[in-house]
Image 1 (tube, helix red, strand yellow):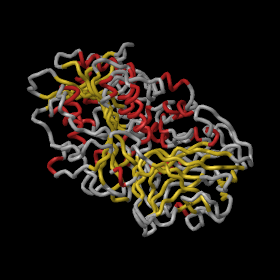
Image 2 (image 1 turned 60 degrees about the vertical axis):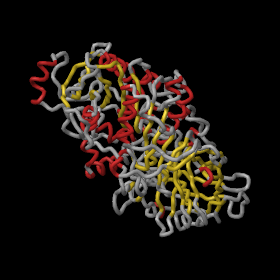
Image 3 (image 1 turned 45 degrees about the vertical axis):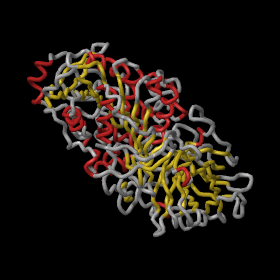
Image 4 (image 1 turned 180 degrees about the vertical axis):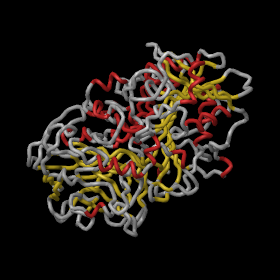
Length: 634
């Protein structure tokens, strides 16, 4: 079995000892029970709509059973996202696993609106499970990305039968909580263009189904003779490079609302949802989490450093640690952060590669941990989680698992690195510098041109691969750093290791010829051989510099301090490496272009060129703030 961090006194920070290979549980490590599947139970919701639910039951389990629920928009009858494999795994270990098609998706009745009805439908489904003869009245829920979103929605119902949750990579559930507005992959007030591809594939509102109200017996007699999946695009399209490149080309369409025109996409909510401002009360009504959100359930929060929403996961952990209703829920919030990408935490291996970066032996007993988590909360085994640290995370660079009692780490030094140059920081051949000393010695500013017709892009032309830090993981960015519309600021080669673990931000003093522009900042680890490997990034549409809930345009030529949240990382910059900050005003094709007019970037077609200046004088000290952890904290 997996052994938690050993030989650590009662301290706030320690390093996990390596495990023998036999101590890791995989999905192939099935338990002692054979598994029986009951297909397509129609679970009736409070409004009469029936949601199709499959049950995976352990055969000959001589006791009442706890249930692990996943509610998904991705087809419960497909193993594309691993749902069936996971259900069989948990059932073989003595739990009932329930997979449910969301309202309006695949076999389930009702009208589909992206992310709607999930609090009520989760609540009703949990009640139905708890009422079954085989149930012990305790339900756990888990899921990654959208299914993780549904997990947070169910938790808001505070159903007494919901005993524990594992939300994985579930940042999209975050509405105005902590001022984040991360709904639908949005970042810093921008629209995520990748949601167009998602809506054209997984977001279809149309499925080929029998008429509603059909009995389960009649449904089962014909279910094998039809396929509800739309035939133009479907989930498998995400693995099709040709299809992805087709969407990448379409992302250049203006206005952005027309991206899906001509792509044979099924009816979907892309235009509807992206036409609604992120700060509109519409999102609160759908259940996106706010500062008033309350839950009353133990949670094991899972994410990865190269996921778009890792900062939100850490915010969720702290928020529920402080605001859960009961003492039991408050005292049982945990978080694990892997070094991988979106929904890939459990893929860590003896040689884990994230994008193009080998991060070493990052193995962790995720599946064994999940079994013990549910053994504790669904079976009542109070010793199952004994010794488990509240916070476990992988440090990239040092390439090791670490643990702590809280986040951010106590004693963290928030260290400023000041931007400086001789006035030509453009591209990686420029003269930009990052200095710890606030004394200004160079030029007062650097300028670049943001042309929305040819925006800075994270696509590497020679390969077509996206080098964005969560779409592509850690990839060499030197090719895209050759453009003049990106400013590059580097430290000198480090003389000793710099452990950066915690939330990152930058304060940039900006002036522009336009009334609005974007700031897209990327933190980069520059290796001695020249590789420029992306660590993480932050984006802000500058009209939201006073808060994401208000729009304030700029006066051309005026200098404004703009604080950009660059999310959270754990990266050790090794001796001989350099810390690099990229400053640009676009992140095509990952979010919509700022056309610079101050109008609606989603519906407008004409833009203006923005001449942007980054000031870094004594009076305008633009700087990067890194959370530095000293060796004494380990």
